[in-house]
Length: 158
Image (cartoon, rainbow, N blue to C red; front, side, top):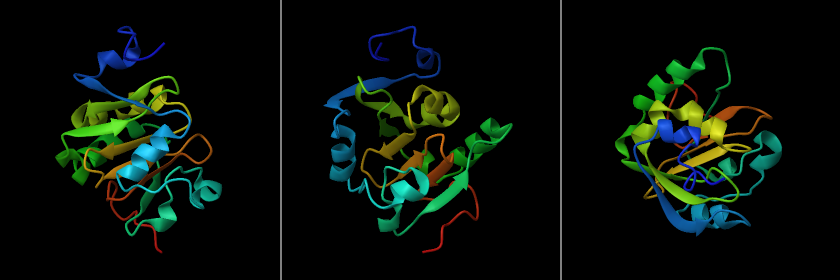
């Protein structure tokens, strides 16, 4: 059942704001949405990392493995200190049957693992203006990719 229709969905315990964009993410809708914000998708990076975003096309690319024991607080601290924290809201898409949603950035930062768990096959979040975006890859590699520094010294060389 949709997070928007199910008030008992576990994420409701962790969020203070959620708004539907009324834009469907399924059938390529989320990729088109991201592309319209300037985030190119479905490139050659899928084979390397199971990334939807084409990181080969990004000038700034940061990446690190995020699925390690006791990572919750450490990654939360990295996110708090990153440029992402300057954005008030983010767009994301959690479930095939749900529309793209708008959430508070701080809700995501403080509960990033719950958001990741609630997604199916990876998680992409993008700032309202499209200037900041990050992608948690699916369970094939468990990489956190972004176009801004989250964890120090994680810039990918071109």
